[in-house]
Length: 81
Length: 376
Image 1 (cartoon, helix red, strand yellow):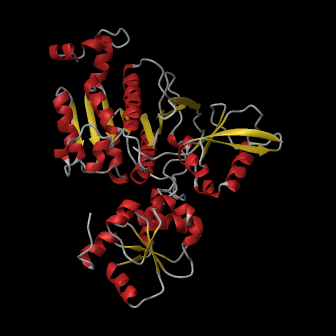
Image 2 (cartoon, each protein chain N blue to C red; image 1 turned 90 degrees about the horizontal axis):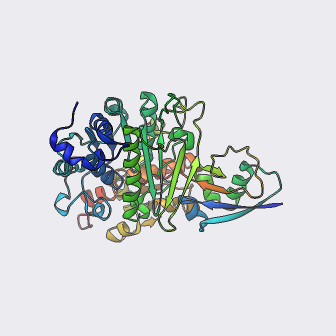
Image 3 (cartoon, rainbow over the protein chains, first blue to last red; image 1 turned 30 degrees about the vertical axis):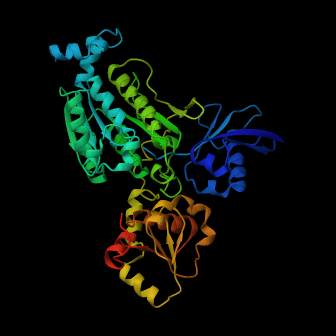
């Protein structure tokens, strides 16, 4: 198992109630597994249709396999102006 | 085109910069920039573009100034309350720089008017406060091949990027839909008007937007294309996320089968509604119904229906369990817009079929049924 730290932005920060969270997954898990794990723990995340995941400051496809020291960020759309 | 003597004096500090100089200032004078939304982000963008000498500035906003705007929309004054933002903004900008050609568009940007308006400008600046207009701007800019500067804020953090920007080789950069392909409903992501925003935040973000506009026009520096800049004013942190254009970026615009505006119009038109008279009758007959008020706490304190359950719009996803499916539920807000969004959200995501939108909201109730009720 590997622990991943996820930085949170916008509404995801409010849903999870913190500016970052930790997710423990089996080794060689992908971005999709990470998102699904978070959605199970925080069902409100499932309401967000478009949720951007960045890994090491780069847009990540759901199939990207994570490695231990990756910097992961969850970025929702923001509407205010 | 040349600079007038007064312009040479006015733009002296730009002319002294070798990166801008006379050539750059003339590029600014020849440029046409459309600013969509004259609110928190729009105010600094407009002030700095007018000061910088952008030759033509279009301002589109259908709202009027109200007292809650003055905490962050710094070009408006107390005496402007109730007056069109676009009209007030242009008059304010003329007093700053009257060498500029201003176009005042006192209306919302809509599907019906977007193409001719966007089509007559070189660059668009997205300073809006709702997803419907943001996706509309994206889709028309992609369709018309216009670059646009995106800015959006949430409480203490903001996002800025330049979308659909062609680099020197003519290769277009990512679009808004490359980051967030599908338009969220207003219920899933709350807005400043419901959750608040630090007044300084749109000021800071708007400056970044204006800066990108000036860089694009003059061709200096590195345009923020292919990257989403995120700023957090509480922690003073910033980070850039690299994003690529999707190969199908052009196919993503104007989705037909999706849950976007076009589909939403249709759904809203078939949404079940109830008038205030029908509701009054149901209450008098003591029918078994539930009334859900989706306004915020302050609005509820101002006036409410005794029978109503308060669930502010942004807390709806957390309170699904309190909204039954086995009896009629009347959803209301102030005028009926937010409640329509909530109903759309619940029908699409939680299979509700028993929801009725109160036509005209609590304001209609105060007008038609209960004259003693406080109106706001």
